[in-house]
Image (tube, rainbow, N blue to C red; front, side, top):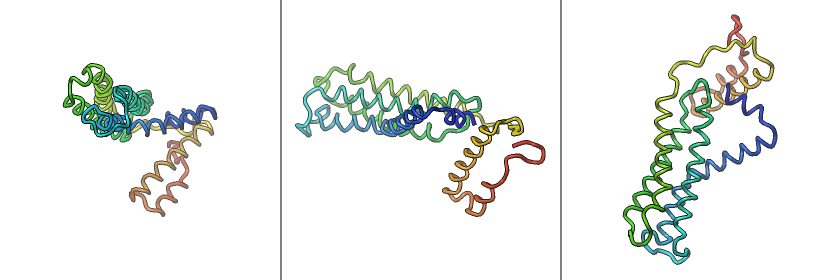
Length: 202
């Protein structure tokens, strides 16, 4: 409810920026893997290619890890701001995928020739990203609420708030229908059901 309300209050320019951030977060999911590819082909591990000049691996590692951090923070920060934190599979899924690719990057760095590059410049960014991923996973498992969301008295909500609730319910039902949890007939019936019950509660 809170996240949906914040999205609705965004201006047109803010919505464009939020959309760009979403795509940047998706690209960030591949950030450490891009660094792995450049590190291997650029000469950090074995000289497979002449396409990269010496030392280009370092900035690529930092850029890849920075994109990975953006991806984690995109899901973590808004989730932490919610008063009722429900289980967020996107936060957990992105964190696990990035954790695996970051560990792979660290392994490649540690088994590479230590005389090629100093260890410290190569390890700083992946280690920082690894710590952020672990923090995100710990937060996801420790801080989410196992209780049901608090009951909402819809009679006290504005028309804009009601639209937010209806839109959120429609998206949730669409997800359940895509997973075959809700049938098409049930979807139509539930989607048309009014928010206000006989006791005035949602």
